[in-house]
Length: 86
Image 1 (tube, one colour):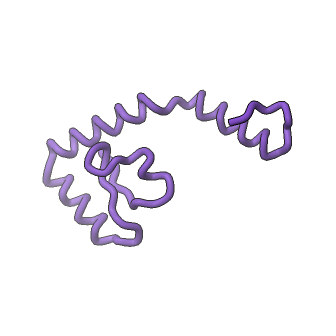
Image 2 (cartoon, rainbow, N blue to C red; image 1 turned 90 degrees about the vertical axis):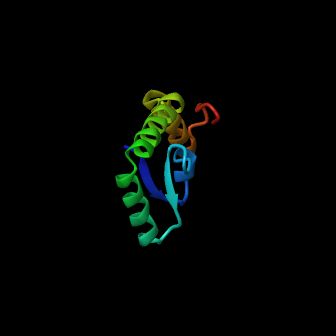
């Protein structure tokens, strides 16, 4: 399934509009609804975006790496000078 989301904060880092999902302006509920209806009516686009989104995340994100990165950031913020720089 593709992602339909608002174009805010870090979301565009993982949802590439028209490639891995659909982005719409923040606070624009009608635009989000229109995007959902469009995907319901276009099964091939829905499949293509969903597959591309899954591949994008699988290639770039690994839970172990993300957890290690976050742990390092928390140690840095807490003042642990032995934490590796991020």
